[in-house]
Length: 527
Image (cartoon, rainbow, N blue to C red; front, side, top):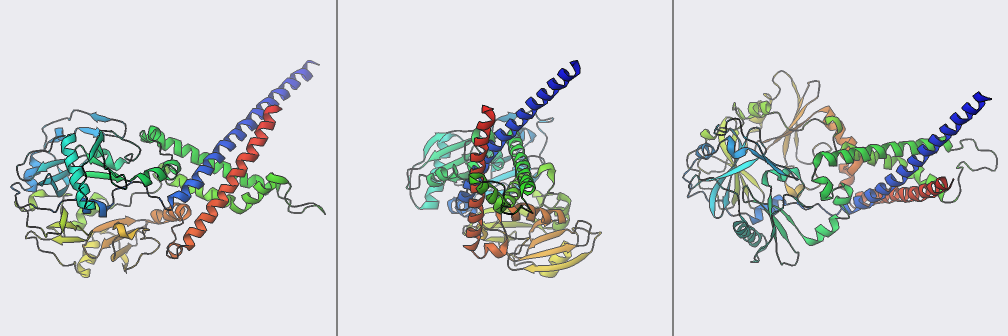
């Protein structure tokens, strides 16, 4: 008798735990389906609403024409004005932390130098090896640019706005935020805290000025700010309170996406098990009625697409660093340029040349062992200039092939391809932004990773590399998540129709999932 009572208690205890697990599963199902609803709706908005960003065309339109005629300091002289102490502060969206350098007076090694104008004066913007920070040195006096104050930043913002819009409107100072809803990107860390200004124009424009360099680094307009709460802020889980802590945000996205993949997969599996493949006469194959039947049908039609969207969304976080960097290594860049360092400022002339009137920004680079000025014109076009300011012709194809052979000297080049149009592996949805220039040379190697390199045929710039893993990841992430199939994108509005239709199907499945889950949850609670 005692054993029977003991066994009965064990059964009751198991039933209690089983009930709690079912309740937990249903609660999670309802919560995740609510997230699915939000992701599908915001995904449709994201097709047409961009997250606030200062595009290259906007940046160049607002910049002052480059004039280094008053320059008295060379790039090497400017670098010599800086030390490790100038780069000891590191900013994140949540804080700025300063740590004492091992040797505060140690000289710095420049990795990138840009030439621009600040307050009508020529300035060098200097990046160094091992740091994301950037510091500025005036080219006419050699003095370092100190922390930008609000009054000076207001002048910068007003002049930038006037050049870009043709309207003279005084900037109104809003504040000095470390970060806010529109400045969460890690690409802005070198400029924090930011100086925030508003303009009383028809678009209610707002500009953010870097406190470290004095550059305008972001803009936004009221309509995109409003609509982004329904698009990127929701879709990327981007509320400031969460996103300002990058590690916490990454964990949240990873956990929700993984849970979503599990829920979608188990839902499909349960649907397969419940399908009556050989129903009895007069009995339907779908063993449900009413709203549950519709949930089953939408699951059959859109469940796989939902699973693939959630899975590819998880891949956007690059879990476990599965997708290797697409940038050429430092060694490969040095091999290609023919120099032993990322940048040798001493190779550039003491006095910068007279740049063409259309130039607004210049970067010092090396190409084929030569010191070259890579210049951006106001219309976004890129030209390369020699030490006299003369435009250099496009490099010869034969020379580019020879230079490319140094990228993997122990491997054989299997094919050279000239691309004058985008294809599935070199592609952008926004060519007007200049991120993927054409024409390019693709160099394919026979190594184990089947490495490709892309080289700009106009400037000779080494653009990127890709391996078999990169190209597979391109299909698993971009292909499955954004439907970035070039043959479909080039046939808009067919792309819009397909993506919106599938999104609405996934939304219907998710809404029905919430309703069904909530009904069953209430029933379970009553029991």
